[in-house]
Length: 188
Image 1: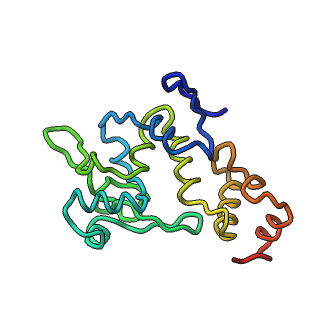
Image 2: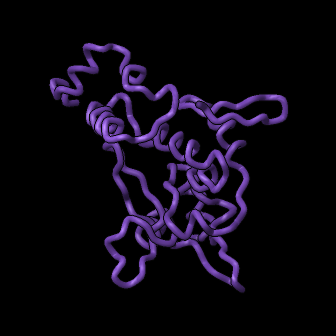
């Protein structure tokens, strides 16, 4: 069942094709609890790089060198803030966001006013999981890249969650072409 919220008089349904403006409205509530940031960080869009670098008064290259790491998912590479991990935990997939700081017992984001799009939408609300899936579908999955489609198919076969509108037969409408992609007859 799709997540819905009444926004003013408009009912918003979260699916793979929900417009960004609606997604931003649904994900706009941040409790500033530090929970999300204590276990990971959000991926940056191209625009996020510029805004965060300007906020920190450093170049985009320096931002990448000092604070970010590149991650690949569905054959697409995006950057995210590095994760701070304690001794003996270096190989774990989670850690505190490099921008999370504690001050007076409170957990604060050093870049809250310019935080990445995924952080702005995928928070600790009832819509958080679906909003995070929306980000993945719209920023990692590339329906024009056969390898991205194959990796996504494997993700789905292994029980990965998705949203309405992101079914394989909806991404690649030509069934013959989808079959050729999945059987590696189409490589690029």
